[in-house]
Amino acid sequence: MQVVWFKRDLRVNDHPAIAQASQVGPVLPLYVVEPELWQQRDASKRQWDFVAETIAGLRKELGKLGQPLVVRTGQIVSVLSELKDRGLIDVLWSHEETGNRWTYQRDRQVAAWCRDHGVHWHEVQNHGVFRRLKSRDGWAERWDRFMALPASSPVALKHIDIELGYIPTARDLGLWDDLCVGRQAGGRAAGLERLNSFLTHRGKRYQREMSSPLEGAVACSRLSPYLAWGALSMREVSQAAEKQRRRLPPHAKDWRKSLRSFSGRLHWHCHFIQKLEDEPRIEFENLHRLYDGLRPTAPDAELLAAWSNGETGYPFFDACMRSLLATGWLNFRMRAMVMAAASYHLWLDWRAPGEHLARMFTDYEPGIHWNQVQMQSGTTGINSVRIYNPVKQGHDQDPKGLFIRTWVPELSQIADQHIHEPWKAQNAKQILGKLYPEPVFDHLAAAKAARERVWGVRRNAEFRTTARAIVKKHASRKTRPNARRGSRASRDQKQLDLPLGDQS
Image (cartoon, rainbow, N blue to C red; front, side):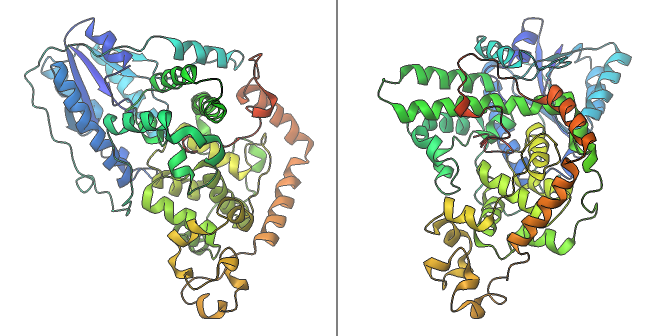
């Protein structure tokens, strides 16, 4: 019996593992709900609710092929042992996963169990991340070749007489309600609708509007959770975008620019996951170790709470955090801003804010998330020190204050000209400190102090030596002859718009 273990690959289309397993023998499709995984500090109810909806849809899709998804709750090794005792597993199949430390250690346990019980485990490449990569040279070309391969098609499955199992609720898993009332719906059908609407009409102004949290909510593809949990494959999204690009008439300049940007961000999706694959310590340690001890290890509880809840006294920043809390999504530039504010303005170590954001993002992808968290905190040692001015960002991205008024109703009595700086309004004393908090930091003074501290480390000669080694191991390679300098593909983060960025 071929057991196909689904993890972050919740689909049947373009699923090489199940396609290959079905060529060998009968297939038992399996998803294991691991309560310990969902109690980790980067997991949340909004994520599980999305996954549960996607699993339910996957069960139906597999049922149409002949064998619905089997769901079990518990430790994966215990589940596999039960299947072994019943004679229901000879070979284990799954896609390769670049997850957090917990999933890495769990996979090592599975590998040991397979060796001890004579079960061969086939791990199949899932997207454009390559295991045991010795050098980044030629990585982009390898990505292109992988994405150009034909997508595998669903195959008929033989029915197996086995109890399908119950899909637990968030309450069953002990997950607290995180109030994500505007979460995107899970499931492949919802993902396909997002893909089609983006490529046919929503994405026309993608390049222009992706930086705005208000306009970007429509113009961005919003495919991030479907890619993060595998309801859609990176290959089918990449091929669909390329197919649409080739259909464009010569005069469709907006569309061409947008699809070019979108394609670049699909590359960056895997580029960042590749970093965690190559160096898993990024989840816990500063990539550049000379930053160790720069910030206090224990976060200031009051500042962390104000930042987390959108109560810092800076309207545009607070609107972003409240929007994220309610929807599970935020466009990339704003994700960068809120993380940078925690690291520079509030001088918090990146770990606690990073964990909070991980829980809030429905599209949480560990490989992208922890790289971006460190990038926006300045601890990679190879990226620009980018300190976002929360007032200026508000003026730039929400000039009329519409986004602020949507999420910070306490400021309804503040005039439009002061909506970004309510402390300048004549009625500020009636509102600040009563209906809405006064600023918990001075953004100009805090940015100046943070910049001096960070650059104090970067001026060290030893710093530059280590930074060069990091660049050699992790930096992108500009190898495409047609790559345009203006795209800034290898400079810092460029609006990734993928998870931690929007994932589009």
